[in-house]
Length: 149
Image (tube, rainbow, N blue to C red; front, side, top):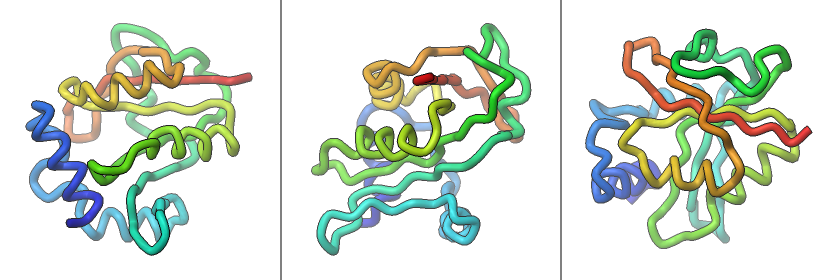
């Protein structure tokens, strides 16, 4: 089982039935992330245990936020997308956050309203809920930001 398949399984088991559907994220999306040097794999020994995308701003879908505001809408930021891990591994989210904040002090993340696991992790790690953004498909996402400086 790949990390992405495992993450989809975790989502479905927790009631998140509408995120990462219709083949998303595809192998092509992941290859593009890696080719653009913004896709990262987490390994434990020779085993792939996690994946995430870490990309520099601007994120086009973050240009307008509804029902709130970004903590800071002037400074550059980085975005984390496509977080995935195996179900039997713990601490992947914390490892990703350590990596992200070692490289930037201003991070944004969005997630599906049904992704309660991600929402819990974001709040646990000090992110603030900022409002709703809309993907290019028109789908709404809950938007979060954390700044450490």
